[in-house]
Image 1 (cartoon, helix red, strand yellow):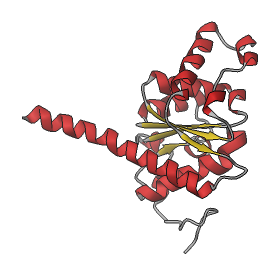
Image 2 (image 1 turned 45 degrees about the vertical axis):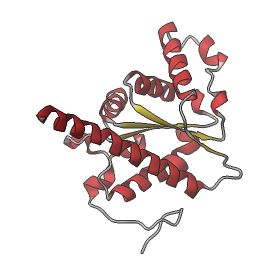
Image 3 (image 1 turned 135 degrees about the horizontal axis):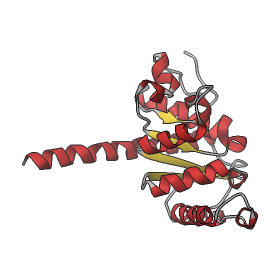
Length: 202
């Protein structure tokens, strides 16, 4: 049996399930993974993506930019669709997170859409979620966007998350905890419509 870098057995599901990029074929995303590619694309983000596929037998579709978009896709449209469709957002904060305009815009959009957000702090502390002055002083963002970013960061700062120290932490343990938390939240969101449907029939 083949195993990935963390030693998890790799289960083979069909290509459409594994791609996660099913939005082009009409499928909706369950999870949106907000992350800084420079820091976490090839470790935490990708391993979480794979673990969710494994735990769900390919049923959970996660939006991860390099796995979910194809050449020719428009970035903003694809990202907005992924955020709009998802049940759960995972925000992976890391050293270079604030260097990315996309990271900040995605986080603000997730908060504004009132999505369930699970923060993961990789080498940073929740107390460090403060918009850098360099971003505030930059001419790249309108005052409205600066306020959006600040509101989103305050919201996530006081949301229970998962912390991980790359120097001493167990990456496999982090991925397991994060995937379990995501699956639990997905199940909770899916149970609400069923309860509402039952109540409407009474």
